Length: 164
Image (tube, rainbow, N blue to C red; front, side, top):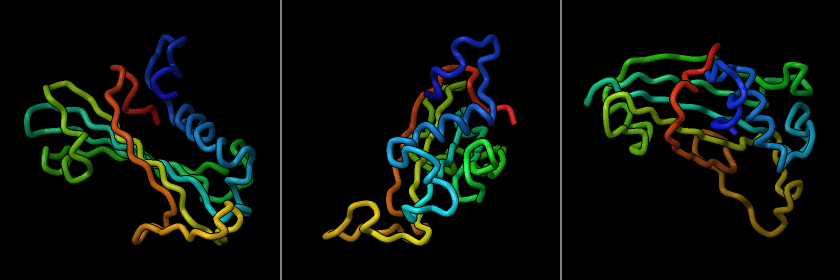
């Protein structure tokens, strides 16, 4: 969705609103409606982190990070239900990029990569609400996360960093 969203626009750079729409659409397969928002009837909410890197030289990278989640309150997408944590920018070294994910390391100057990290976090979770009657899902340390998935992609030029 991220790669195709701005195909029909002159300005290809993604916006904060574009990211919000993609994130909301990406969680609908589990939630089907606004149950992803407060009061969280399934006992979980959705969080997505983006880590964008651009290689400037062999040891120097630009890193942009932003996050969005449905745990910020509100009752629907259009009513402030999707919270975003802002966009941060840092200059960093190759070793710092490797700490985030070795897959983010680029091969040549000017290359760009994006790590998309999707997390389902607990908030009053009861396993039977998601159909876990016999199995108890394990949570990840310090995150109160039931499920997490990380994907690294090479981007079309000009999509990131997003306009804030």
